[in-house]
Image 1 (tube, rainbow, N blue to C red):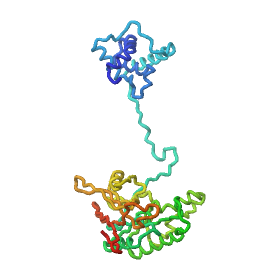
Image 2: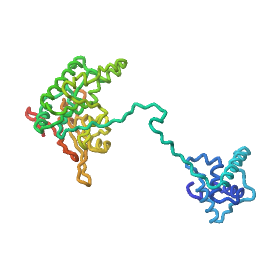
Image 3: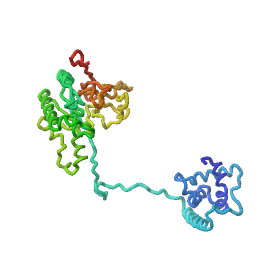
Image 4: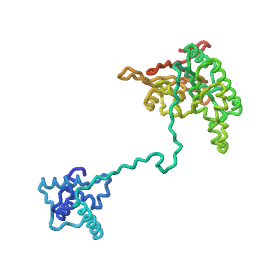
Length: 371
């Protein structure tokens, strides 16, 4: 149906009728008359009966010697006299329009409303900006899952951070386990929420003691959400009272800890850092899949594995994704067989570049060794 020849075979009688009715019209105007008046023109959103295509068809008919007029034009289709009358009225209206001159271009530009002139209430969206980390050297720890944590692995990471002289400590999600309020079944003798939150406060106090001048950032992971999710599921009426507020429950202000929610990306120079549960990409090579979806360099947690996927661009700059291992139990009851690893990361940057040391920890002869 896309070629002129095919259209002539299907609609030749229609073309002949309009040529006979308006023998003095130009091919362009005749095409517009047909497009405007024929009912079938409404069946195709792209305008199969467009003036340009019909004009081309008429020209093709003339070049091939096909008669473009017949003494008694046939009736159009099965619409009957009512359709003929409607078409005749449309044709006359269009003919009068063309006699006034060529059609004028219609301005479809919407008015340029100022914000004060737009008669509609504002939505809740205010835009979300990344959290920019000012420091130059950072220790990144994640998936500690307090109450399921491994002290030897945490100590190895902290010792490396102190030796690296970091000015920033990033807890990149799932610092807490929060087994009791989980939607998954928990044992009645598992650690209580009160006891785990007490562990959280003690851990933040210890970090502040070990890194007295560093910025300490607590980024929200999916486990850290469990108190809030529990209240939303079971007591949404008291949500506004703020009993789920981890900043208050962990006394972050007291310990000088910055809270960054799960939806906010942290920016360490040109490196994006997030927990990773909201960034698509899983499978065997999570680093490659996260990099594909992030479209930029990213460091993430959540998967409890140590991986990296890097590429060098034409300028010689490295881009990639780094999955940082966990600091918690490697073979929990809910997943006794897996490929999890202990790990942490050390990152340094200037204004244009960053360098990642994605470290793994192994237990050798009873000692936690940083590889």
